[in-house]
Image 1: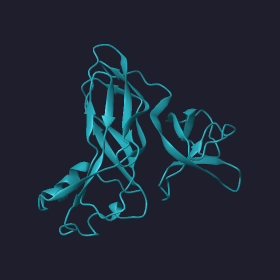
Image 2: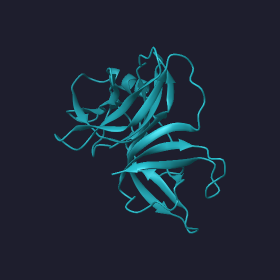
Image 3: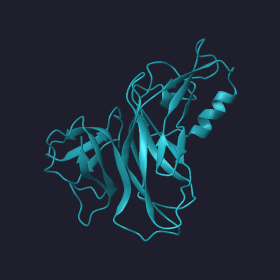
Image 4: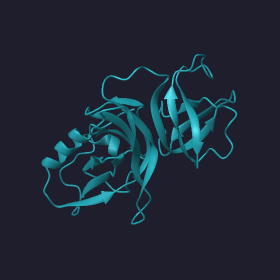
Length: 220
């Protein structure tokens, strides 16, 4: 699955005329390292709603404060139509699905071990809210390894294969590899379309033949 970095996309914007529309968008899903080192930037996977128009660039717009990292992403579109971006150069942005990309979270302070919330802008049009997708543990030095590999959260769809194995995938993603096996195979009531929080890890024994799974913690 192709992921586009904001660095590459912003380079495209530099070649354009300065007349752009800012199109705010919602975070559908994010996953990130469960533990990070203080003051070091870290990469966050973001799945965001794609606007129903051709666009020129994407900015995840991360910011951090004393309690949280927040992504408030937006697209840039040309008010007078697309003039400087070819479909070949941004084909992942015009495919009929949400955008699967990455954002760089700024380094967080932490003289002692502590946690920050991971938040993303959700909603539509003018009803934007900042929603908590989970948290990240910050250590002054390299943290000790633990079982969870990546914390994760967002709006998901559920799918069941012919063998009865349940998988989840971020809303609006349909390509190969978009889905991940659910570790809690019996805990699926009301899961499709829900907003979930949990973590991605490698259990002691495979689930449905897969070594990497999503462990569900909460759903809304």
